[in-house]
Image (cartoon, rainbow, N blue to C red):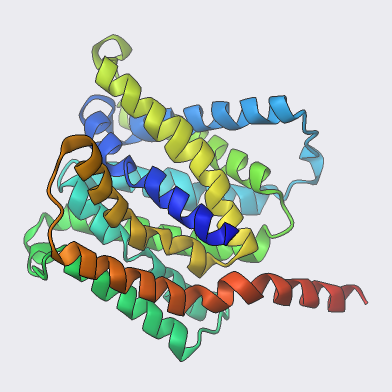
Length: 305
């Protein structure tokens, strides 16, 4: 139940993220958004570490895997999403983002020798069918939008899929806190470099408004700092496939926030889409959520014996 509670909580946090990005992208630019959300996320995690008085063994960290995950799970995909949202709507971006579990599964099978059952593949496809219902079955909408905006969004989901599988394989023994902190630190430093290379530093006095401050807090403290703790917890205690299934729920939670905060109407087909998505999550992740941790423990015990 803890895994599912974490999954729902994460989807509620990330359901607002695409809106925050849309608010900030014009003033900050794609790489400015990456820098702000990463730095605020780093500050959030650093405060938590100080409060908990945790001692970090920096010398024992696997720096190369952490750097790769930082690139593929923060710097590159967040930059691509920022570019994407200069060309397509935030709602459409969240729907395209929901292809992440599919790419995660495909990359896992091709590159990481992950084996998925027929039931799990069925669940993934059922969940994706639920996403299509959210578009009111207007599939042609996906092909009528800006191709660059769509392409950069799809590339971002591929990055997410790779990094999720890679972190499950190479960072299983690193604490969730440290993986999240190093991911965001890599993103912050890398985005500074990208701003310097593209000469896209944003004028602070012109971009800071009350709306942008609230969006930065939502995107940085919640959408990056706290959210990444939950995300890497889902990968570590569940599986990469289970963690990325949050992207199937994000369009639903985005609609919920629109209804709750902006009094937007929820289309009737959305409820059918939600039912399919939840069925897909259950079918494709039941094994991962309940058994993978025990299997990993058994494997590590066998290696040590």
